[in-house]
Length: 411
Image (tube, rainbow, N blue to C red; front, side):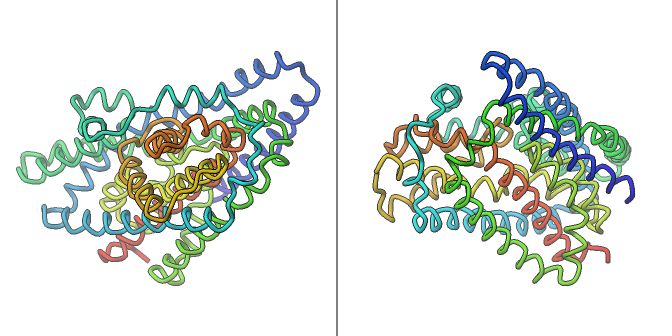
């Protein structure tokens, strides 16, 4: 626990230093040097994230297969999976609905300054955007090669392969025991690697914060303060609902869970990557008392189906851009957009800046200029900090809730 608190302190110090260094560079360096500085300092973040990414595929595969095998029978797999999907669908719809209600109430699009659009960043995102189709969705969910899925860290495809592998291993009984035992050993080795990789977290945090402040400066908050403020209200409402549900299910153990996941929340916040804390979150949930078989089964599913912060932001951003262009969408159209976002977001897990890619595709689908994504890009990094942290909270609660319902939560 002492080491954990020390790392949390180092991350907080790194955040403060990142803001200070970025601010100094922003105000004293030439425009040419700013870009060079940001690109070079972000190498620290790239190193950290790549080290995390290198252990995600083997961790997801080994833990999910072992988790299914430990559940013991296909009825248990179906029961636990059904409870998880019920949570995921309910949480996703609630998150999207909160975003829709708040954006209609506050109308954040009316405060967006059209002159501050980041057009170059928007073109990059538009280039990544594909028109949504059932074919694209299916291709993104079902792997043609597990090796390719592992190489590209396609979590959803890995989950699909691992579920089939785990169910097959469970069905053949004793023949699979040596394989399951070996994969259990792999999972424990990977979780040990997590401790080594997390030691680099402060450097990654420093690089991420320093780079964005160096380029954008603190002035970005002046231009986009109200937009960020309204989004923060949405995050607070979503957290209040999640925590309330958590207290109803976990009772007096809820504060203990929050202490356990404090470090993963902080890392996700400062690196804008909920994926970066997947291994650490696995470890902390098991320490909290969730059985490894439940964590191994639910958490990888959650990272594909249960990104509450990102879901809320998608409706918030899409409708705010429509407001900025003065495009009125009736209630029926907004509900249709909500359902489209519900579906399209599931087929894009693991894509960098996935929320913005989904928003860009959705804008085009509803005849809103996709270039409008440029309006929110300058402040998106800071919104991403909060939605990444919310994603981690949502998945931690989903895993502990299913553990409690299954009677698999140790006190």
